[in-house]
Length: 131
Image 1 (tube, rainbow, N blue to C red):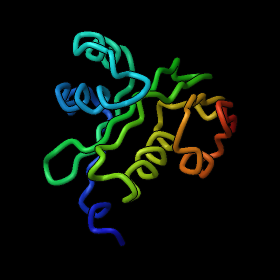
Image 2: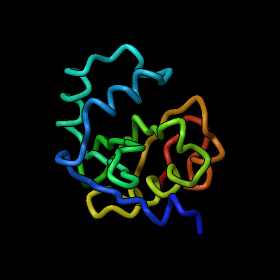
Image 3: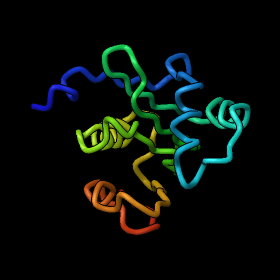
């Protein structure tokens, strides 16, 4: 097994979100590069947050906007560039899909990249996945 994956800890609470790191990660993305730290904080406060840590440092993040009953929008999925290609995105998506507060009925994910990763979880290009 990948040494990085063995040392991962995945959290689903706001207490484990390092806002500065998330802001830095998202500032390098095509979809959130212009978001302020304040806007990122507000979006996280109103979502379910998933933070991935490796040896004490946050290396990945995602958030889920959900009613916790029928619908979930998985967004802001990002992995630090030094950790990409190591299975962290897969681990994070598996965690999200098995989370007790994420409904199985409909999940939406919009993306312009990483299609192969998302296809592994039942998503197709810019289409929602239903279970």
